[in-house]
Image 1 (cartoon, one colour):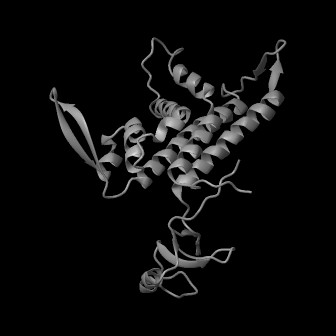
Image 2: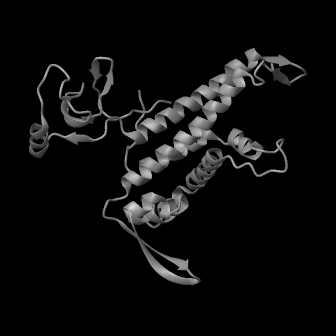
Image 3: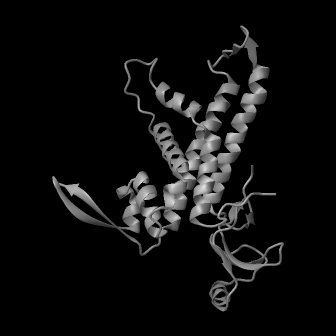
Length: 265
């Protein structure tokens, strides 16, 4: 599975777009005096002309210019790539690295530094995939909430219930939980209170994914002894069905915005 990574923004050509670009245009053959943030008019391979932005990368004396990728798609793509790498390690490297001790038991050699490279990479790519999946999901949630949106809710303060109004800035700052964004805000901005009725499994999958990522990020160490530190988090991370999480994210995003995620052919 490989998804397309569109540029962001990706604006249709209009008179205003041309006007905005012309105000900031610099026609040069070298990079002197160019800023690190460019607005460009480009023609895609399919013939479409669009307005895009670029944040070039300077290396040595050269400036490398490319459209800025949509972070939602980019992070999701990284998550898929790292999940695929973890699966290849499990399916291909483990049988090569493991020494058979019984009918179905294999041990990966304990190396000089105490951990086997194959196993390290497997853990690394799985945990990275989970973190990047949630990064993509949170970026998507923040992106689709309108700038002028106000979230009204009732909460307790000093033992009394009162109404709270959260701006988008407050929502993004963490004043509203991830679960609340999914369960309350998404149906509200979609004007569809039954949004989750046909996506119940996907919602539970996203909440489970989010909790997994939270555990990985914080890695709390309160345990009886070192033999138990981290292992609850690692157990859940290894048992998580990441492929299901990926499919749930794509189904959710495409239900919010039609064809938001497209696959490479």
